[in-house]
Image (cartoon, rainbow, N blue to C red; front, side):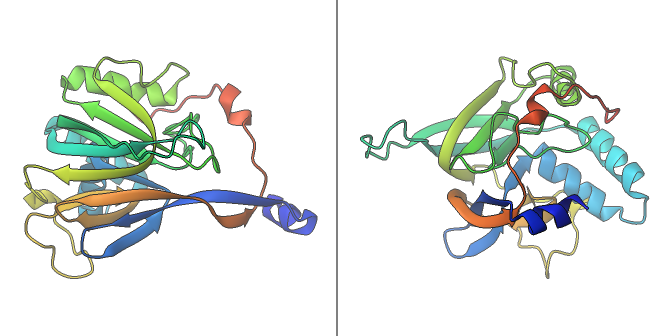
Length: 239
């Protein structure tokens, strides 16, 4: 009903979208991507598609937490320009061991994160949120995950870094690839050494380097932009 009303009333909403590419070819269009925990959880869930969806999700989260391991990689990113006069492209780089890396062009609201996986991002502001979770203890990482369901700042931890960017390059330095339990059929045989990626909930495999670039207001959808979710105080039992 709501969608029909938006069409009748002509409510149009421009939305940012991202391109995901390797050095040799384009990979995908999408709004969000996760590398590390979020991708390996999805890879494990896809391996057990015979389970009911909720059970499969919970099983994959618990199993991945039990064997939690960081990814050794380098993140290069181009910060969002503060003004039109700032024409210099100054790339920044961080490296180390990361439990999860998220790149979000939209807030990504869901039942497990009522305020969004990237609550400070908007639909059409021409930027992406880069969220890098460095290696830490399992207990601290679980605390971080639980905060997505509440009203506390899920990024207020010393092992989490957030940036507002317009382009990101993710380069794994130790190409461990898929674990045996994560290997699934991905449009053919998975290439040895490629790493799992979670792009909008779709399992993909990335090469030695994946580049993510935001394209401001590239598509237009029927709907209205609202920030009502900023004051939303709901919870879920995802963990």
